Length: 79
Image 1 (cartoon, one colour):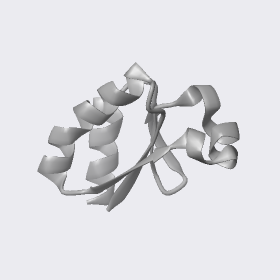
Image 2 (cartoon, rainbow, N blue to C red):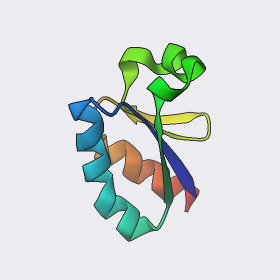
Image 3 (tube, rainbow, N blue to C red):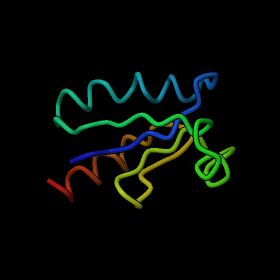
Image 4 (spheres, rainbow, N blue to C red):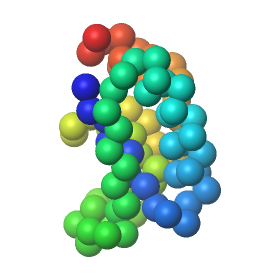
């Protein structure tokens, strides 16, 4: 499984979510792509103030803060 974290380098919420995902990644073994939305005008327009956004494909799992319940439910549904 591959999850994507849409991210901004200067965003403290983004760094917090990335850190909080580390134990989840270790436990469940998913791949995590971290994409800086500021590097792509289309992504910047799409996500702008929503970052951080955690997604699998086109399915949003959560944004702003890691929602542990939603992530656990998502991982359980996919596994």
